[in-house]
Structures are given as structure tokens and as C-alpha cells.
Length: 69
Image (cartoon, rainbow, N blue to C red; front, side, top):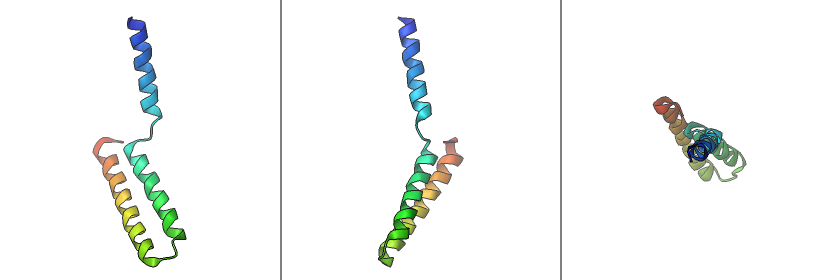
């Protein structure tokens, strides 16, 4: 029925709205990488984590600029 479809569409809209945006997800990854870097005793690994963190932050900025996510 139309009511059932409308309820299902509303449920799906609410579910999507509750998900983080791409930019938020990339920023969370960057924050996690920064935390890993702060506790990494091997400087070579820390440098790789820093590079990945910076890449995730650039991807977050691009996602935000590209589509408002």
C-alpha cells in the first residue's frame, strides 16, 4: 500500500540521515591515525601514519567541498 511505502521511505531517510557524511568518516579515520601515530614507538611507522592521516584530511576536505558531505 502507499502508506507502507511512505513509512518505508521515511525509515530509509532517517537511517541515511543518521549515518556520518563522507567528510565526517574521513575525519574520524584521520583522528584515529593521529592517535595511532602518537603511541607508535617506531618513527618509520609514525611517519607512514602521519602521511595517511594527512591524506585522509585532504580527502575529507575534498568531500566537503565537492558535495557538501
